[in-house]
Length: 469
Image 1 (cartoon, rainbow, N blue to C red):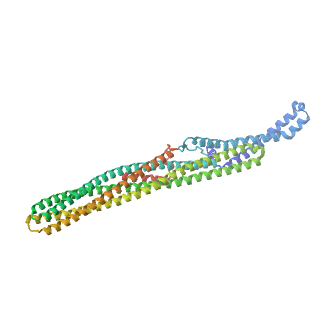
Image 2: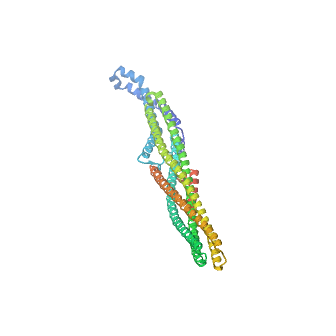
Image 3: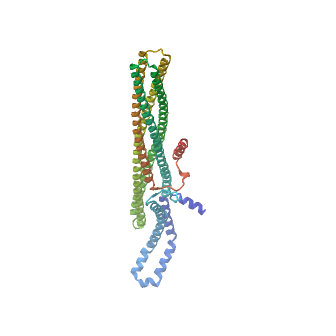
């Protein structure tokens, strides 16, 4: 029976509890009326009353019962205020002070088990604390993911830069071979003009030019393979940046949720402050008997101000996190643009290599035709000169394409350098974001109170990381 009564009492509001205390004090005063009257008569009939004189006797007759009843009322009200308001207030204040320090400790919950206004305030605070704790943990994981992705981008960019260097080496080789082939063709042409009868010399020179063309075709194929590797690596970097952009958008989404939580805490603090104001007004109406209640109301007001201050500090930290996230998003957009430029330049280099390969294949066919003509001794000098002019034209195109490929490769290297710089900057920003989040302590496991939305976001992020691995 006592346990049921105690459970029902904890579910009452503060106003009902205080009303019960006043009623109990009134009933107790009525029950004590007879004993008090007996004590009063005893004092009036004792020798002490005669010793005190008629003034004291009149005072006892008039005010004795009133003073005793007032004392009983004050004692009951004092006990009720201390039990119903002061104790939860002290627990609430102690919890708020324990959270405030060099770090914002989110791992502790309030242990107020009543169902009144303080109990509901503690339950609401615990739910907000659990959600905020989970959001901060999600922020930490996302910032670590951004840092890891930035490092992967930097490593991929280094690999692309190495492939670009190989492409440049192949391009230089192509240009040298093209120049060598052009010199050979000019020598063949000059020899034919001077000694049209020495077809065998032209045959040997044509064979050398054909061998140079074959070597050039092989070099072009190797350069084309290197460019394809560059394109695949650039596409991999682009996909990694897309995943990083999704993580940054999640960070921004979670920052908005924390701002709404801070607004909720501020609203609770304002309601608590309003409750303290109403309590102070009621205490003023109660007069002397409400002084203790007025002191408690002032403590409630101070606690509300501290809650507002803590909410403002959290809002400031969230603003810093939001600014850092916005900067990271801008850097990511610039990185994506640079990657797209790199893909475009690599595609142009691939087209140039394809043109070089086609030109040398045509050159090789022309050289074979020259060999056939000189071997059969059927062609005339004019025919050979025409073929050599065509070959010279192809070699000129090859040299031009080689120079264009070298230019495109340099542009790719510039884009890669910009990507590396952007990745390093993003890594530093992710590190700064992680350092800012260290102000929150989230060591407590709160799976039972975590919002389903955050569980869903965390599951999606883990799935994406597994797929990337």
